[in-house]
Image (tube, rainbow, N blue to C red; front, top):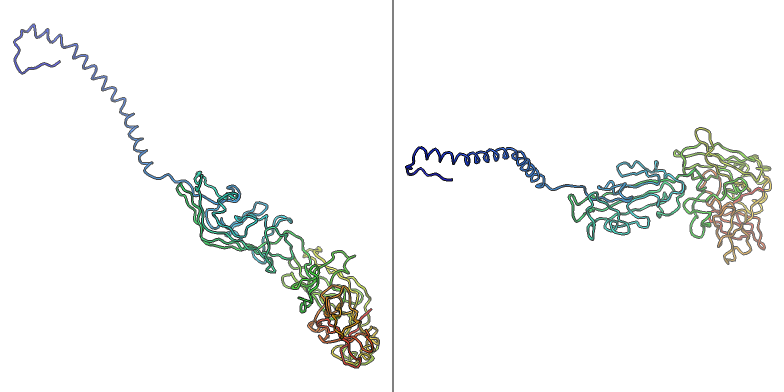
Amino acid sequence: MLISFRKPLNVSLKQQLQLAELSQPRLSRLSSLTLWLFKVSFTLVPLLLTCVANAKMLSASTSNIIEGTAPYLTFDGGITKATQTDGLLSIKLSDATVISPMSNTSSLSKPIVLPSASDTFANVVMFLPTTRNSISLNTLVRAPYNYWGDNDGDGQGRRGITATGRLRVRIKDKNNRTVSRVDTLDICNAPYKMELSNTNGSLKTRYGVPNQTIFGVDAVTYYFTPESSAKVCYAKPELQESIGRYAGPAEMWDTRKGFIPQATTPSSYASNFPTTGANGLYFDLDIGGRGSLTWPSITQGGITATMTPDANGTTVRVTLTGPASTKNEQNADLPGPLQAGIPNLPQIFELKGYDSSGKEVVKYGFELKKWFVNRGLRTAEAANQEAWCSSIGYRIIQVKDVTNATCDGSSSCQNAVGATPSSRGNNYHRRIGGGLFSEWARLANYSGSGFSNLSYWTSDVTGERLFHVYSYNGRVYRADPIGNYYGVCVYP
């Protein structure tokens, strides 16, 4: 209600009082409303302030991007996560041990020992699948591999995840021969070398922050050995004339390592190298899976086998010492019984390696059936050499005592009878039991043995001629008995 005072009202005092009485209730109601609104405003102020504060906080937080985690590669469902190159080149053994380039301490002399004797490289888990030696990271993140993860759930859907870069693996044994992931491992071929490498690469999801993991180019070399007890891997004599037509059967002869052991029990030691011997001849035992051992010498029937390990204990030199002729005996036509005597043959030799506690760790056995004595570098006619051998109590050799050669059609070797199994031609074949030359090859290469690499008379006759055999290759020829060749005798 508006009251104007612009003009004086001509009313009596009574009328003014009545007018005041009429307006008083309305003013009173207006005051009450004003008071209520005032109280309500005080109640709402805190709520309004809270809303304003929350609005400011929301505005402040949403003005920054919410960050999660980067995608990663994994070959075991997220247990092992690769977010950098060290993880990309890591491996997991069959006992769940994880080894990365940073934690790798393996070396040629201290390889990683695989947890189980049956382990192959298929049990060494890595980002490369068992059937692949090289693979792109983009292939790894696709089916059927799906070797990736993202804790934020990014990367789902078509083209949700992409990768660049490539992984490669190369495995070789100690002989530099390539090994597949599923090949059975042999302590004799250890340590194995695994080279794992990658190119520059990345892993990227379509959405998310961060949405990318970078892998720098790198490489690592791991060395392994299978869980296995020590064993003799090879018995290595002279290796010249060991390949091509001279090479023995693969199950018996390795062109780079020598004879492969054929037996591990005494009753079968006759199947092992050597079956023949002479003073000063030696061979090396290649030992797998063990360090330095003690190898006592052994003497049987007048012949001694002396073992000398190398500094690492991985090779043991076995030297045969037994009856041999002296210079005076070699120069005499009929020297009489050999001063060094005659050995008692056959004899089994069992060589044993012991650890520092005296425990037997490894052994190798062979049976010597024949012992040879040469006349040094003295040449003579066939009759003279044969008489010399008889004088010292031995006999002059036959073709089959020294070579397993067979005649290849040449008239010079017709009717010659060599050891069996026979070679494929007129040369020896590196075989256990194939004769002295077949087993030991170039005898002159054994320092101090007194042998020549040239030809030796035999007692085998063809018509009016005798056969002689070249020691360096086992070839057989016939010649008139008046020719001068070297002499070597055998017992029995």
